[in-house]
Amino acid sequence: MTVRKRWSAALVTGATDGIGRAVAHRLAGMVDTLLVHGRGARSVMDLAAALAPAHPGTTIIPLKADLCSMAEIHYMINRVCTAVDQLDIVVNNAGTAGIYPRTVTRDGNEATLQVNYLAPVMITAGLFDLLCLAEHGRVVNVTCDSYRNAKLRWHDLSLEQRYHPMTAYAQSKLAVVLHTQGLADRLSASSCDAVCVNPGNADTKLHRRAFGWHAESVTGAVDNVLYAITAPLDGTGFYFNRKELTTPAVELFRPHVQRHLDRVTAGLLSTRLPWLERVHVHLPRSTAS
Ligand SMILES: NC(=O)c1ccc[n+]([C@@H]2O[C@H](COP(=O)([O-])OP(=O)(O)OC[C@H]3O[C@@H](n4cnc5c(N)ncnc54)[C@H](OP(=O)(O)O)[C@@H]3O)[C@@H](O)[C@H]2O)c1
Image: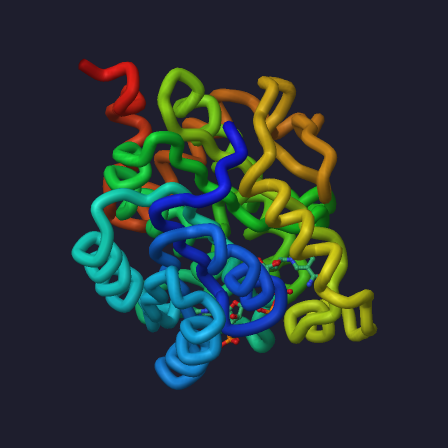
C-alpha cells in the first residue's frame, strides 16, 4: 500500500476510549471524512465535538451502535453507506475483555464472540462494496496475541458448556486472526487488502479488566495500529505483531478450517460474505480510460 498523506474516508470502531480514541485523534488529520463509532450516543458525540475543532478540514461523523445488537450494527452500516461513497480504511478496533458472567446477546451469541468477532466481520461485509470503490481499501482488524492460547470450540462456539472470560476473549481473537487470513487471501488479486494487528499491551479499561494490572500508556499501541493502517505489504504476511509483519504458524491456519469458519460465521450472521463470491478489481483513475 502506498503511504498517502490524505485519504478520502476512514472508519474507526470503538473510538470512544483507549487505543481507538487515540487512533481516531491521529487519523483525523489524515482523512477528509472520519467516521467514529462508539457504544454510547453521548460518548461518541463528545468525541466528535472534541475532534472537529482540531481538524477543521475533516468531516467527523459520529456513529452509535452497541455491537451486542446486530440491529444496531445494521443501522450503523446503513448510515455509513449513505454518508460516504467510498471507504479507504476500516479499523475494527472495538473490543471487550471476556464478559463475566457469561452473557448471551439478543441475537443468540455469547457476547464476547459477538463484539470481538462477529461484529467486525458483519461490519466488513456490510461495507465491502465501499472498500472496493476506494483506490486501495484496507481492513485493519485489531486482535491480541492471546489468540495463541486459544482453540475454536467448533461444537460450542458460544461456550455454553464450559465458560471462562479469558477463554471467550482468546477464542474470539483467534477467530479474528483466522478470518483475516482468509479475507487477505481472497483479496490478494484485488485493490483491497486486509491485515490484523496485535497492538501490544496498553493501559486501558479492557486491559485492566482482562489482566488486572496496569500496562504502559497507549502511545506504543497506537503507533502499532497506525503502522498497520499505513505500512506497505510485501506478501510475507497479514499479521502485524506490533510492527513486525508475519504469518502466524498455527496448525489451524489451513484452507479447510477457514472455509469451515466462513460457513459457521455466515450462518451465525445470517448473511452472505461478499468476498467469498466476488472481488472487484478497481483500477486507479489514472490507469482507467
Ligand atoms: N489494551 C491492550 O493491552 C490490548 C492488547 C491487545 C489487544 N487489544 C485490543 O485493542 C482493541 C481496543 O481495546 P482497548 O484496550 O483500547 O480497550 P478499551 O479502552 O476498553 O476500548 C474499547 C473500545 O471498544 C468499545 N466497545 C466495547 N464493547 C462494545 C460494545 N458492546 N459495543 C460497542 N463498542 C464497544 C468501547 O466502548 P465503551 O467506551 O463504551 O466501553 C471502547 O470504545 C481491542 O480490540 C482489544 O482486544 C488491546
